[in-house]
Image (cartoon, rainbow, N blue to C red; front, side, top):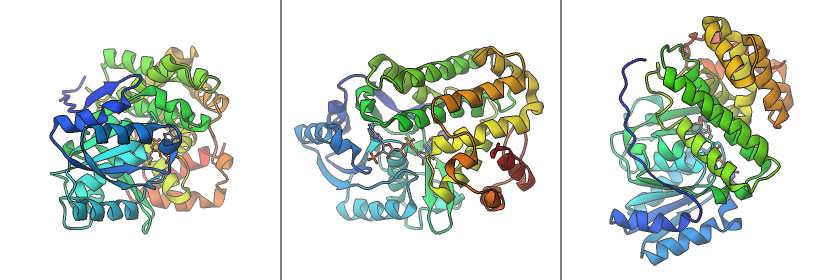
Length: 382
Ligand code: NZQ
Ligand code: ZN
């Protein structure tokens, strides 16, 4: 167990019928005007939009809407919203949606106080020190963005999907009402769950030792998410499993799983972000393809841990069988497991590796260079 600091400043309001509390949460801070940010319109179909608007009006909170944030959110949309936020002089950002909307909100909130190009926060040229306050109504459990300080955005011009983290990006309050996720398409439930599992795995397999309580917590989160997905793909309105999936996904990346670690490996994520940047595929789908290939490539760096994973999660005896069982499970729940499954051609390996290698070497368990990335991508065709 390495030394650690655990600090999470986000208040979570969790449960059935909690969306209507968003206005009260904002009012408690005394804010009177917000930028209301959302995605492609799912919130208008499932009633979340109406509940949010009712709650804001009841609390006399003025709002300016910006909609159309797309999955794999882009920098141009963020910049458009920063202009609106400045022009309208809003006091806070309200994100209603999933990781794409929340990450955009975090970037807008930081961009509000920065006169340069906010992409500088992603390249490291600007260290975010100040953000507008952020409030969240979560509509899909996946990224943990509702309770962390991270944001991931794609720069469409350079095809870079990069991230920044700031303590000022933690939402002030996040509403997690699992019933609003009843309307999720099956594949989004699966991709969200896979993303959360891989967040746990990034910390589980970063080479850190002696985190006995964390290993057990992480295994419990993974097993709970797997069971939840299996049930929800046939019964999307099962409240208990929606609730368990939602809280598991939040715990997967709210700082809990990182305590005492080396900070996570993150290789699967960095390689996946290149796939999303180049082909606009869903993050969870990309992870389902990349993670088992990464596991095969690095397992000898920590065979003991891969054997533990095989035994604890799948009841298997060795590392190889554990990884195969994971891949088999991903396939069973309908996730793609090969780059072939999403129509990417073998000739593109160089281009993808080039995109990811800008950040190399990366990875804690095994530092990866371009030739390693190429080898992993080749395994991801099997
Ligand atoms: O845009 P709408 O119409 O709302 O539809 C969305 C979108 O198409 C739909 N959806 C969301 N809630 C729904 C719903 N449809 C029906 N009913 C509901 N209740 O789901 C689709 C996906 O939404 P999105 O926000 O993109 O999903 P997710 O939460 O998986 O976010 C993915 C993004 O977050 C980044 C990913 O890279 C990706 O860009 N990540 C953010 C992280 C963070 N901030 O900590 C960490 C992650 O590793 C990840 O990289
Ligand atoms: Zn992720």
